Image (cartoon, rainbow, N blue to C red; front, top):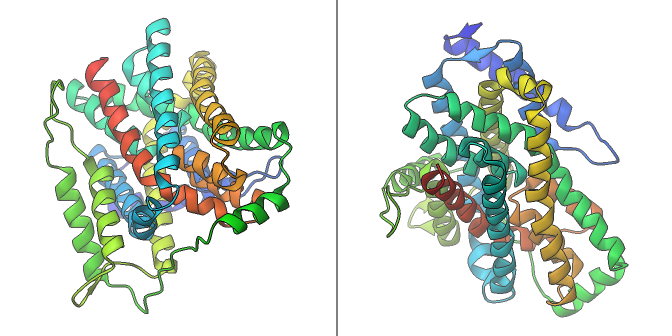
Length: 387
């Protein structure tokens, strides 16, 4: 069923979003996957033959991604720059190691399995739950091939490995608490004693729609600029994820320029963010759904899951151990660090509820921007150099 009409496309995305939210609210061992459920609802729809024409789905995917990362950047901009006056450098250093270890593991898997790089890129992106990295990899693969076949396979590998990408972080957090016999109340008191951190609030009276579209336009234009890097065979672009994110961080920190207010009221920010990621995940699932079940049935998908679990778990568990044991970091920031290093909002939500505190959100926002940027760059490096 090829849905060429705009109204049918909107209907299909709405159905995928609605059922995905229901799936995301299902709790297993008191854990839910949140907005990640949209990926699975759209995979189901894609499996049963529901499609959106290629040009339309690519437009919607990139538009959703741009709104998602821009609203994140606008919110965390002030926290991002302020964090470097405190533990920001330490936290970002550890987060950078998490990202780099995942990349190295992907290369090791590539070397020993000889899997196609499209599959490796999808496995890595799904294992670290990074949708912008997936988009960057898919764009390069499609440009190299001139068609979407391998790009779709990349999306299937992402979808297969995504679930443990979420639950792997949660398992690591629970294990770290057990290993170090963490008392959450004592950790909360220790953090409060040594820190006077407060959350950044976005409390504008109204949404400046003009500023929103100016900011996103600037981000899209920045993302389209080719950046020549010595040693790279082709220029690297920040793309529809990296460009808007970088612009949003700067504008979020600036807050206001003359009559233009760059920041958004928090409710508006959250609505646009959720809408953006829902549209993006729905597009990924609908494009990959036709091949998802096939990959599981023929056994290859199971192998992808196992390989993805290695990329997910080893870096975050290792850095969690190092952060607590050697860097003497409080458990609450560690939870946020691991969630942020994986750019994983569902894991962040779990961390806040698990700790019964907003403290993890501070380290999450501190490392999110750098790790998002690195995930996008590493995904492109993987495809450019290891085809």
